[in-house]
Length: 441
Image (cartoon, rainbow, N blue to C red; front, top):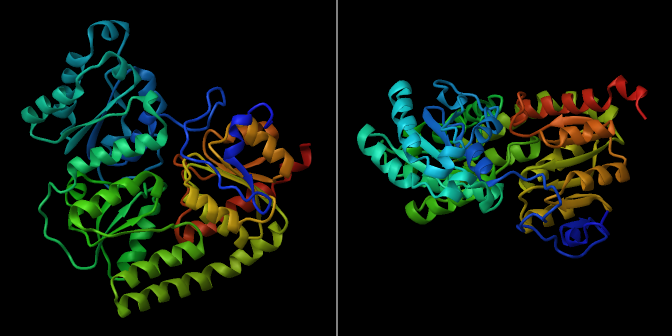
């Protein structure tokens, strides 16, 4: 494997055996068939959950089809985001330009759906032919009196992580344009996308502590809330890969501090509550956080102990978008008796990979920006019983004859929070212990 893709050696280490720092934030190796997505896809998945905004893809229909309903992001109100609008560029538009088509589409869609704002995504084709989407957006914004924001995301300009930044730059245009009064103990939740309604679970915890949720960016997002995001006292960042740039920009512009948290697993979920209470220096808030943790711990542990007894000795491979999520998954699996033998991510950072090395057992394979051939080989070598990943990893697991747990953005079951930990344990158990494995090699 490594002899074929020797240029990938610096991005693969084994816990306990390798002292080298894993290389990351590198362009994907040509021909390696990376699991990463393109810039456009990265921007689309971040902005998609803003439910009262129009999302118009300026490009061929395939880009819209690929990202249609790409997140399992639920809305408590409008659902314009569930529709994947496209200018559907063809050969003629490549030759003569698609600006008129874009303007006409924006005017028609804004009149029909009355969105609070519109995001216009550029794609590879637009990056090649040079359509001036900035000027079209400014023109339509003046006509319709709503924010019309270009998202500069030609797919060939980088990776999914570059798309995250493009999305954050688009959000920056909105942040600070609202004038809603500020409230005490106010936070923004950044980087949770309300997959399967997870955000509502988290909001309930914080509200029980006496915390006001100022804006959720972008899960169950609203344009007005994003515009008033600068009124919060703290940014709590869940998906650091997608939202850290925006958190840093808001700290620089508005002086809003931020903290990285994870809502996966009992340990990290509890820390996410404690750390916010500590930030506000409120004894009452900390007491309420402890009450929530005590209650949920007492409720969950008897159930988790049963799963741990059944799953003891099982092995798991993890490959997800960000390495911060992988850290939480390693801890959550350990809690139910499952050993992590392979762990990797598409957009991990060096610091997070070092934490993973310290967490994992000796010999665990740690990989950055992997590909199907590598992942298949690593899973077979380590004799993993279950693969945890996303839509692109599912076929790898099924071809090998391996149990699969979907932990990416298209899933339909809540896996965050305390309730999510129980759901996660149930899913791992049901998959790893299925009688179907009696009939496979």
